[in-house]
Image (cartoon, rainbow, N blue to C red; front, side, top):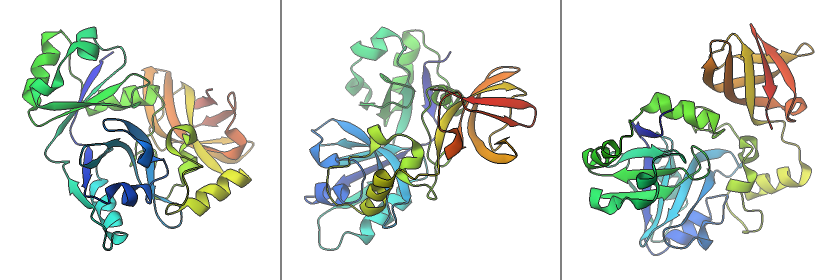
Length: 286
């Protein structure tokens, strides 16, 4: 399996200015204010109704924050922040077109995992969970230099397709594929990684807190094990005559099996829950 993937595009937005910590903490579900320089966390950017504006990893920098996530989120994040920045000194800078992203799996060759000085490649390394714990992304303005280092240790370089196959196996949702602006944060099923319930007020916090208190989210993402005909993303599943799920990302394992990410209704949140689609059976994994 490929352990390094070069992505064709990615969202990279830098927030700079003296008031950036205040602004970003007021717009995100996680406690970005507590991050030390160089450290990061997963977080949602939410609107006043608690719906998703973006899903990113936020990293503290010397000048503010860098947000990294699925492509196509920069304009939404920037305009959303501008709407709630009045007199504060905080400016979003879209760097998405300036940097090339390489994502490394936890099992990548040791020299790339711990011994490479990415600064010599005009690159910066960021720890993420996109391919499981221990994976990381390297952003560079000179991708050729990064590719040369990767090839020197004998690793091949995959593309978007291989990346999405690997992140589906790792059960990591991708904004624009598994999640959208129609979702609430808890529907991603990553509360521990993305939501701080003690940080205080932020935009959309009332909705998030109410859902936490009542426990009434009606749908959420789960990982499915599929057997039978390997379905395409978008395939629906039913049980007892009712639609109970829809697949959003599918990673084939063989001609008649796959691992998938998909939406499940409340009746199918638990591991072992089964549903059927056209020519296949799906079981919720732990």
